[in-house]
Image (tube, helix red, strand yellow):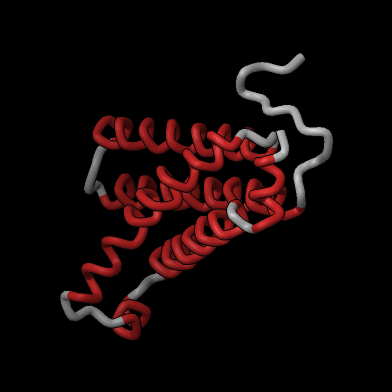
Length: 155
C-alpha cells in the first residue's frame, strides 16, 4: 500500500541516494552526540538545570526525528524530502553549525589555540561537529548528482 508520502519507483534507489540517506542518519547521530555532550557538561558544571535544558533538548529531538523521517522519505524517492533536506538542514542547519566557530575565528581566535586549550570533552565535541558538517555536505552533494536527479525524475 502506498501513501502520499511514498513515490513508487520501479527500481531501488541508486547508490548515491542510499549513501545520501545514510549520511543524513549519520549527521543525526552526530547531532545527538553533540546534544548529549553539551547537556552533560551543563549539568556537570551546574551551569544549567535539567528543567532549563529540557526545552532545547525537546527541540533538538524534534529536529533529529524530522531529519531521520526525511532521510527515509528521500531513500523512498520523495523529491519533496530531498528539497526539504537541502534547504532546511543543508543550508540553515549547516549555517547553525558553523556560524559560532566562524565568528570566533573572525574575532581573532585560532585553531591552534583552541586545540591547545581543549580538554577531552572539547576535542570529542569538535571532532563530532566536523564529522557532522562533513556528513551534511556529503549528503547534499550526493542528493543532486546526475543519477540522483534521474531517479527523482523517473516517476
